[in-house]
Amino acid sequence: MSEKRIEKAVCEYARVMGWIVIKMDGPGKRGIPDDLLLHKKGVALWLEFKDEGKPLDPLQLHWRDLLEQMGFDVRTVDDEQMGFEIIDDFTP
Image (tube, rainbow, N blue to C red; front, side, top):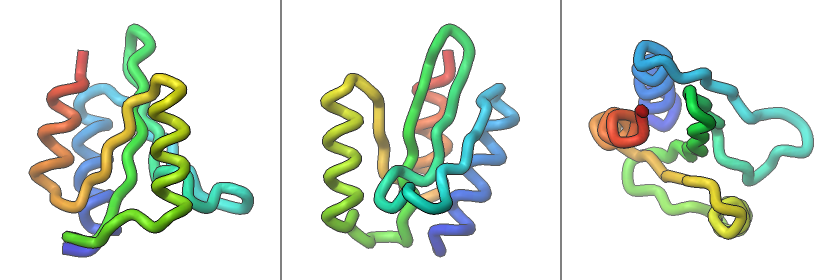
């Protein structure tokens, strides 16, 4: 399944579950995870969407490691069901 299709389905599900979804694209944002999700009680989750089985590139790995070192949760999603389960696990 394509990255865009997975991202659309998972982000729609996240909104239904009460998350604010912020698309992180545009100039100066290369390598940053695709979406920042925010929920009540200060819960934040970064999601990087990939085509099924495609690895993160070096800049994406850099950003993932940096955000995790700062204490953020960062997940790579390459399957719709995996994305739904991540949303379920992180929803307060």
